[in-house]
Amino acid sequence: MKLPGKTSRLLDLQKAAESELNGRFAEIFSRHRGLAFVHRHDLLFTEHWTPERAAAGYTFSGYEVRNSEVVLYGSENANGFHYRISVCFPLDLADKPSEIDAYLKRRYEEARKSSQSAVTSHSSASASRFGD
Image (tube, rainbow, N blue to C red; front, top):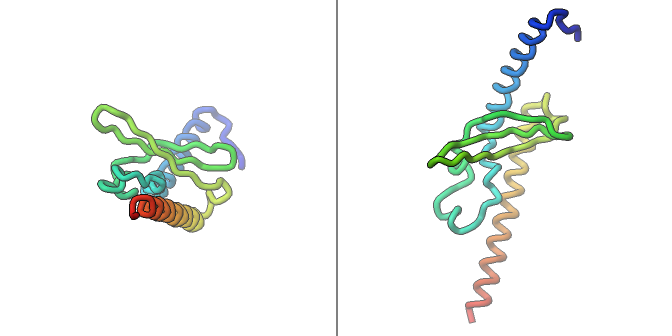
């Protein structure tokens, strides 16, 4: 890739690239932000929320490449507090949107299964402890 010779042109290129990346990553984040809450299975949370509903108020706020992962951040301001969540995927999937979606869906399903088995085993332990 040949870079522009002028600094102002290079800054324009950076701005255009950043805008394009933010747009692409915002779409991915909005589809998969519920993953940030999928491990929550405490009673207070599960009585009032689903992961998707809990994440609904979060908007994409940026990204970073950390080691071999792309980390997508979202934030929400509510009741005077600033909340932040993140969802990540392997950097080597960056050029493969359908594989990013498949990877994040797979992580979501795995997390739901492990959360359900944790809740089930906790319920069984409670029932056997108090059932007699």
